[in-house]
Image 1 (cartoon, one colour):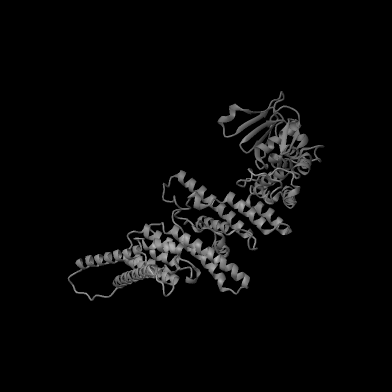
Image 2: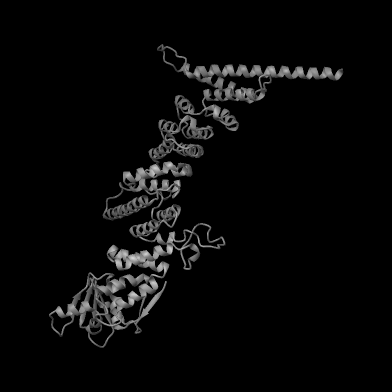
Length: 581
């Protein structure tokens, strides 16, 4: 950052300690001449001299000439509305006294605005402060990368867009540097991507500018990025990366911060809490404004931002209470890029409870993804969408497994979520089985009816051999499901061995069916003991049919075992006779 030094005298301004008991602070300058000018700036009273100040300040000349006061008393002047406040006024006053001051991009803006306010121009005195500051601005500030950003940010916070003589040149200077080829970047910049500093680099990264401009207020940031986009010289993903960096800096992810917008509303209503609540609401309003602005700036080109970033913005939108149009846009865009996400990205905390998740928002994102398949598409696009569907199925089944860990999550809602994906979408049910098994494990008190209802989601024919083997020995699976698994296993075994060669069935499978059948009969006997004396018509339910199927499966497997054994003995006898001959 560049500096400009003006004046050469030592700093003789001091604070009068005796007046600290009052509501204002006294500032004066060491001099043998008594003060004849008292200037009030907010809560500070300056006791100064007309001679050096009136020579260079056109405003003070007019105010003092209009004041009718006793010449023996100091002239009072109020400058409460001077831009930059006390610090900016003191810079100008020291310049008039010839005291050494240092001007940089950090204090250039308030000093310039205060000097113009005081009319310290060439019409009042030669080589005045305004002309010197203008020269520094054009020759140093606008030529520097970080200097331009610091001056732009300061000008915006003090006067907004009204100070166009500083704001617009800074914006133009920043945009001009952003559009330069990376090979021409010769100034220092901020770049803190993970692992970047540890690798040797031969060239400047294309997104070298994104972190530095993320320091700007959102309105100034939008002006810079919009100007860059208007040139059409940078690709959309680079604009998207700038939005991503800005959002990560100013919008904390509620999934990891654990915050809650309304989580502390029931605490003490003391004045301190009221002030804290007001500050929290103000912070939420600022985050809401940043979020909605960033969303409107997202380029419409596919791939300009990632699906994970869009889901992060959706979580923030849920947390800060963004408008329905903002949420709808994020759901639509995130749905079109859902295959780029991970299961954790679909975990969207509720604003009222950071430990609970908004499954409705995740369901809406999935619905928008599936809506793409209802539109006509070219063969290449169909193939791409088919690959995307396979990814989304894995993502959503993993999401279901995470949701299943919630011991209070209702089974009806879980089944509805699992059925959001059409049956043809899942080429295998391994992920769905793991999600269902997790739900059964975390909800051990489920009734038999609910367990059966839940396990009907699983198509046993779409399970891999390893998962089928695991499911058969899973005590949490209903008897009917295990019987279906054994039938599928037998069909696969017969199909693999051919019609004339039946492989011996797994004895453990036979034992499992026998054990589960016996368990089912014991449960039935226990239920009969506890029935009421009132006679009720008995209906053949799923359990009885399952037990019958299990018994038939046992007989079939046992018969297959005996048949296979007889064949083995016959083969051995035939081989013995051939050896004897």
